[in-house]
Image 1 (cartoon, rainbow, N blue to C red):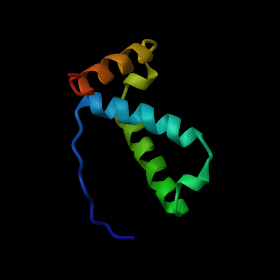
Image 2: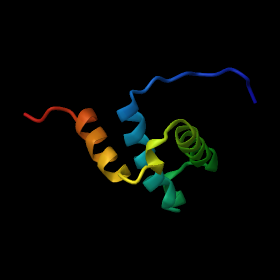
Image 3: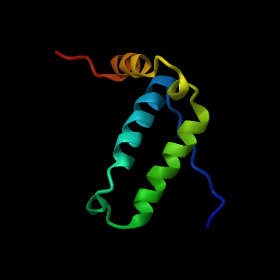
Image 4: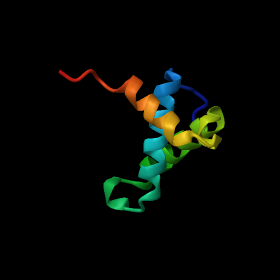
Length: 78
């Protein structure tokens, strides 16, 4: 495997929203969504990376934190 890295910058709110999504997505064992298992592996890995970086998922008011993060990330509605 290559040692080359690709860095992606996310705001804290984007990271929280992505972590929440990946958690729900990865719980569903519907493998038909994937062309091959390595796609699933990458999503698991991203979820693990975010889990190491974020303290918010371990806070008692996590659902409120997610709600606020979604409000920040959400596009303005016309």
